[in-house]
Length: 282
Image: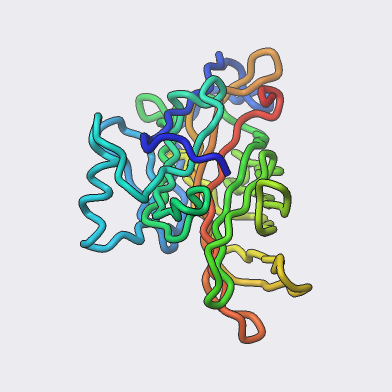
């Protein structure tokens, strides 16, 4: 995986939006919020820009100076640490901030060896204005990228990725549910394969939050063994629903995590995903 500079990467999708996903109902009263479990993640609205944040923090008090370095607007790069995310800025710039801060092995191509913090910040969701539902109905589809970091027993931290690893996310605005399919692969740039499929996760059409309990499958790259571990996924959708030229104006991002054992083997998975309308992807 190519490791860019330490600064968080801003991501944006500039799309016009009008018309509803399924023709669009007339604006109605604000619907009730649907409880979406946060699982092991922190989930809140960032004060500085109003973005919806999902975060997993493994940092200890000893890492405070390192994290401060990444939050400084013009610091020297913290030695031995990197932000592992680099995305297509023309596609996502401004609509999300994705950050994975890790301690890296500088003698081994800056390979990640310990995660400190994972963050997915998503621009505000514009489905409710002045207390009333705007227009979204029907199903909205997303595709995009997925990255994962996996440990198996006491082995090293393995990095997995797939540029089309968010194979499918379908948000059903009428049912208030999310169906999602995520994977990584084993390839020249990816060390481990994972798979995550879940249907009927709660989706709050007011806040744009979705998620819940999931099962993540991991294929051990060293032996012909596969593991199934229970975990949690938490994501947010941002932007304004609606279509123009068959393209909707929403983007999405989030985190997933699983930790447990299968057949006596301990497995931990941490992951990030992001996506947009499939028609805008290169």
